[in-house]
Image 1: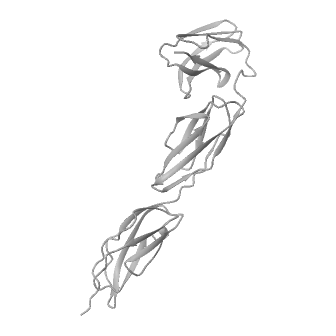
Image 2 (image 1 turned 180 degrees about the horizontal axis):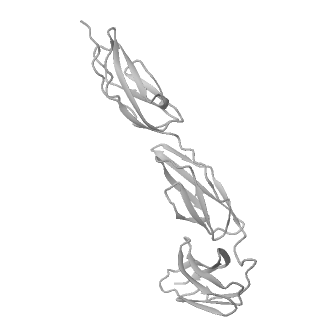
Image 3 (image 1 turned 180 degrees about the vertical axis):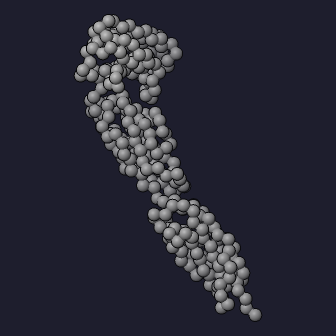
Length: 270
């Protein structure tokens, strides 16, 4: 006497997939089965076609998450029990689109971001600046050092799984000619010697600001020295010990009330 087909085995096939792809799955032949019924759950994950031990899934591009694929055998007595499901991690095809500061000042930070996905890794490329925060995430802070008037760029590669990655369109950034002495700043500032070895002298006098923050910043945009000082009509002299600093390019910046009063390149010669 013929009976229903026994329970199917777990299907075999890709367990991680991008939604713009199709993928094939197989199941071991079931004793007594004439045909096979394949199911996919949830239905919005995609469509599955096949009546034999092989089936093809066309993934829906707007689905992301876990899908389950199962099979069962059929014969003249009816359908046998469905076997264990195969879990498939389905990733939507990345489509990173960068937004952020298109016009920045030289020696200023800019913020750039793409939409967040919990399944994604982000690899950023920056021309003309350095990433000072957010590397590997969907939002970065860039310290721009490119020449004034130049056009630079940012792009990002978003990766969700092996073979499931997309490079964004290049996001252009213009370095504006806006760093230097503030138009409202009056004062005499002398920074010497430059290049400097072990000691840097800063003299400030005849200023129309009462206080300011003296900052020394490295090429990565990190403030390595700062001191809030009085810079009104009296002379202020500052001596900065450079013995602990590595040789290279730095930037002296004078900031007051959220405004950059002036900035100047400094070379530490070691």
